[in-house]
Image (tube, rainbow, N blue to C red; front, side, top):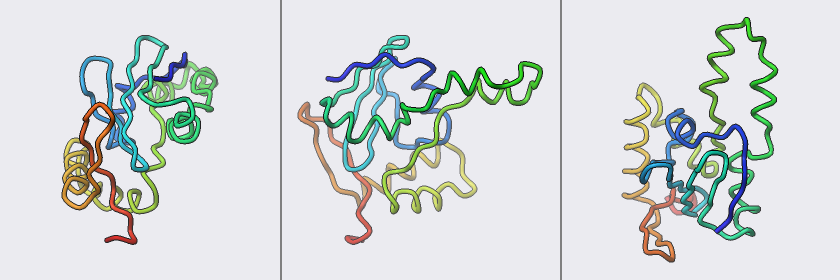
Length: 152
């Protein structure tokens, strides 16, 4: 278990943003994320986050994936308060999902055409459960990864 205090991060906002289709709400304030062949659960209590991974895995994968080095508070503060359009945009700002590798990025882009967030999320999960690799966490949670393009 890894804990961090992180300002200006809202998991609900990220999950609903249309930028991260493999992040789903498991229960109140707890989200599950699958990327790079790994599964992660994140619990948010205000600005304190608990990640279901080791410190090493957090540093090697999730810290960059979740873009935790970007100061989103500074970005929000830099917007002119009189610019209603940008002020509203930064209030809804999530982050940009780098996608689970090149193949995941291509497939997600193709599926996203003429779709809504809910349908895209269902399509990606269906693809992963159909042709992806099934894995299990130490706690017995079953998940599916994107298939490596070499194995398609």
